[in-house]
Amino acid sequence: MNIPPQQLLILAGILFAIGVGGFVIRRNLIVVLMSIELMLNAANLTFIAASRMHSTSEVQNLDGAVFAIFVICVAAVEAAVGLALVIAFFRRHQSISLDSLGAGE
Amino acid sequence: MIALLDITALDAADLRGAAPMLAVTCGILLALAAEIVPALRPARGLAFLGSLVAAIFLEVQLIAAPAGEIFSGAFGATASASLFGLLCATSAIIAWAYSLRYYKLEAPYKGEHDALILCATLGMLIMCGALDLLTFFVGLELLSVPLYALAAFRRARRDSVEAGLRYFLLGAFAAGLFLFGAALLYASSGTLSLAGLRAASLDAPLALMGGALVISSLFFKVSVFPFHLWVPDVYQGSPTPVTTFMATGTKAAGFAFLFQVAFLMPAGAAALTGALAVATMAVGNLAALVQTDLKRLFAFSAVAHAGTLLLGVAALAAGDPVASGPLDAALYYMGAYIFTAGGAFGLVALMESEDERFLKLDALRGLGRRRPGLAAALSLFMLSLGGFPLTGGFLGKYFIFASALRADLLLFSVLGILLSVVALGYYLRVVMTLWMLPAEEGAPLLESKLLSGRLVTWLCTVMVLALGLAPGWFLERFF
Picture 1 (cartoon, each protein chain N blue to C red):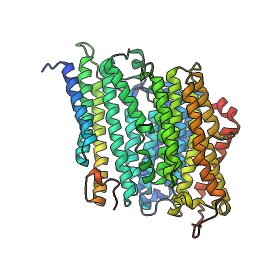
Picture 2: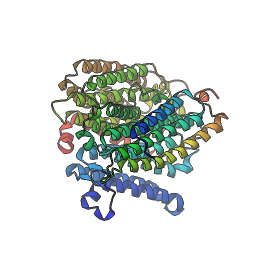
Picture 3: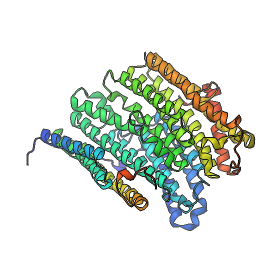
Picture 4: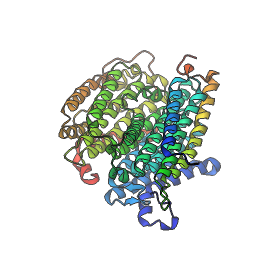
């Protein structure tokens, strides 16, 4: 149960890099949305790890933990609007590939 | 620490500082209620306008007597935050006034459109006064998410849906960058408040990276080179009233916070920021020179104006000897920009709601003879955007460049001024098309009698001239 915060930060960094990489490279819209979620969750992990890092046994620093809860909520909102946009896009293009973005009718 | 809000601990200052936001919240609730209760529907416009006018009125009072830090230091009801908030609310009114006849197919959903615009305005007001990263993030998302939906509002059209999707993807990516940056800043300093971050030493690599991520996500929002690539497509594809709102309000809110967090940039980043500012002006102005589509032309011009404002941020980072100089200059510039760009995009929306052919520059030919009032207003906005003397745009530019010169950014200022001259190339081309070229055969002839559009066009015209001719009046009252 006692993972050092440094290792958590490294894990978060790797997750974030995978998210950015996926966002830039992949062309499937659903995978791109998943990559964005990965980025947000990397931030969450960092917040939680840092919250523990800055807490002592007497004083708890909960700023990061609170922020993580906000992020989870906002991620749900973004997913809702994002998926709606993907569906609207699919209705027009019959495809969820980014390659059809900007392509002719 | 973020003190968890105790509702009994709210005092009068909290309520006074939050009053503009509460007014906008009432507007949102009324707009939504009107969707449920058909009897309320005729009062929809009144609720929208009423809440925003109330917010503006309350912001003006806050400018005179700022409430200071409220909500345990999460929000700063300062004079500059109120002034930025005032501009955001004004830009929402301008966008709304031009949207009344714009939607045809989507007209039944106009109520949702207005509610979304109010939500985004509320987000802007929160962003303008945010004093910690969490508050800012909530404001940012409250601004962004409604705008994703608004950009795709004409969902029967391919370009609108694509604009919404593009804006969403890049906005969500920028939010991811911001969050990870904020998390790294928090990891290295243990605080989220800007005051705490200012006091902490931010030289650790973790903090530097966090600061860079936060700043670049803001660059995305305000469309600074090299993060400006989404702008032309999104501005062109979105419904024009939404573009109006995006170009003016979002920029004001984004720069309001960018000025707050400029301290995150390490020493020596001022030169980099200045270089980015000049690059932004260059790509915006040069690309605008060859556009034939009006919305795309204005979109590139919006990028160029973000560059000029960024020069103000660079002046702040480089240490303008007049400490409040860059922020005041940016506020004046933004004030003029809200009315000029709002009016310019708005007139495009107005003409487009009559005839879509007006989206091409060529359709403006001979308009000066057939509709002199409209052509004169559009010409004035062009001159102000180009920074002609006696207009608000000129003084805004002058204040920004003066501040940059005080901060020893000589090279960037000179390049910026030269690029402003390049910009005249396309602004004057619009004016010339309006007045000097003969009308095409079969040119659109419809004339709109939209009262709100006319009133707001007058408001923008008067404000652009007033900001140019009587700067003392504004400087005395608002600065």
